[in-house]
Length: 228
Image 1 (cartoon, rainbow, N blue to C red):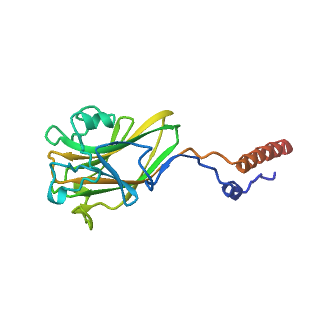
Image 2: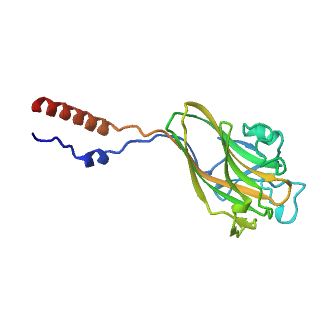
Image 3: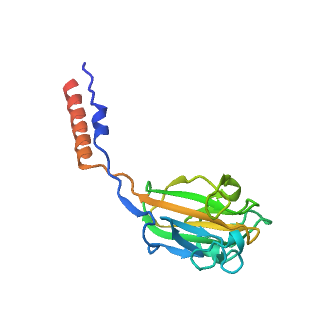
């Protein structure tokens, strides 16, 4: 009996198409977003800081938008769909103020969120926190203690630029929020850079791939009929 083999390379040769649901490289404005606190576009990326226009001085005087950070224990958590106290590390180390950026997107299971991020800080205590919130679920990206590289800009230290991805498991409108918060104090300003935000749909088979799969199924049925 002859075995039926179909060249696997043909399946790879016809790529699937993944539609872009949302994308922003921050080369324009923040019109697609809701911003809370000190949020601006700097050097082609969104920059969120904990810098207050009145309270900060010296190296911490880096507020870029003219808007003060949101107060925690209420305004900041509400803005990112968390309960009050949801950004606290524990009962001692509590969030004090911060800034956030959010957008609501319709997604389906398998759709993927990707973005680049970097934390910059002058917080010597090392508690300030950069975070992501997806539909009320908190994901901590890094703390100021993770910033060990010497910064060449307005901040003392910085992390490397990293990429993050998240695969959605439910259908419907999803709120995605990025944020940065002071922890335990109002000094030692920290910032979060966000860039290249992309939400991509589950890849859909191309017409060529569908035809190829159909041909494979037909050939397999024909082979079974011949060998009976």
